[in-house]
Amino acid sequence: VNEAASPSGDTFESLYRRLEDVAARLETGNLPLEESVTLYEEGMRLAQQCQALLAVVEQRIETLRETYEDGFGR
Amino acid sequence: VPPEVYPVNQVTRYLRELLESNRHLTEIWVAGEVSNFSRASSGHMYFTLKDERGALRCVFFRNRNVGLRTPLADGLSVVVYGSLSLYEQRGDLSFVVDFVQPEGTGALAAEFERRREVFEAEGLFAAERKRALPAFPLRIGVVTSPTGAVFHDIADVLARRWPLAMLLLQPAPVQGDGAAPAVADAIRTIGREHGVDVLVVARGGGSTEDLWAFNEEPVVRAIFASPVPVVSAIGHETDVTLADLVADLRAPTPSAAAELIAPDRAVVGRQVAALASHVQLALTRRVTNCREDIEGCRTTVSRALPRIDLLRARVAERTGALSRTVIGSHVHSAERTQALAMRIRTLSPLATLERGYALVSRGDGSAVIAAAALGTGDHVSLRFADGAVDARIEDRP
Image (cartoon, rainbow over the protein chains, first blue to last red):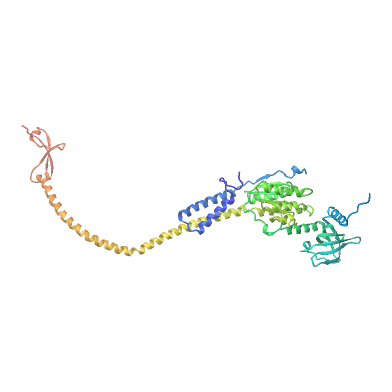
């Protein structure tokens, strides 16, 4: 299982950055209509994936082995 | 056997080596009063440190005394840090000073200051090497005591703000003998082997002595060498350790560290929603632009319309001329059609009937064309020009 990652394996950060990029491209670039529609669809999908990741309820905690004990004989 | 005779320099060298290898005489703190202070043109400082029963010649070299905080003067009570040595050319014993603190400074505080200056000079605390924390951490490492409230405080805050991240606790004793190397080892292990993208080194409040492990060189060096950004949260807000100074970010408390390393998911959720609405608005605007473009085209076409009307009129004019020719031929055709119709009409049986003839047929509609085909009692239909009557054959010889 991947932390903060969508089923596709993308991390929250990569999804969020792509969403930002999509928004910026749509807002600034005078793109062809068809491309705008494609970007819009991608943006909506990314926003949905981000919100799904943010909806995680359970925190995962792992306690690692105390490293200093072995080899140093404290 | 005659006694062995040594050259002076051999004796002085031996004496120097003896002094410099004695741990009771090297890297020690000495308290006393400054007298015979002088500052040579070379920048080196010389003075005698004395108390009521002893005196020690001291040298404070220029490379060590630059940036000296406490200006030295005769009569000043100080604590100095350094090592004893021998100036071989003159056989003079001298204490080589590394660091000076005004008297009254606690031993720990003086040592803290000394180390701070050493690490600072080395660039370990430089602002330009502080790293930015990840915006959306995935794996958060925590080095702290497995017992006590610190880890729970951090986990509680993160569960609320950013449960997306996995939390890895690398336990280590944070107090007492062996704490410093254990903490240093924990920092190295979790930073290199567990793929965390940010690290918290934390300890709850305590006395200066309790927190001392976080002023120890192994811990400072381990934080400095960490491959990922380190946030320190040692003791209370008023406590500052060398670990705090070398960390990429210092948090006043462990809970505050958790607030600093992770965004609040509610805020991030609103940011995502805002981006999504930007995307929607941008598309709406794009579609509106397209509509306007089309509208623009239509206007251009409309403006060209007067010319089209002109052309249409011209076309109509030509068509008129053409029509007249066509209509002419139509009139001619109509006359001919009428003549033909007349001829067809003369051939029709109806015209014959009008002249007084009648058409004889049987009930099934078949025409009777010979008297021989009829017998007595047969029913026939007689069709005249204006209608038909039924008849029966009475007498058939």
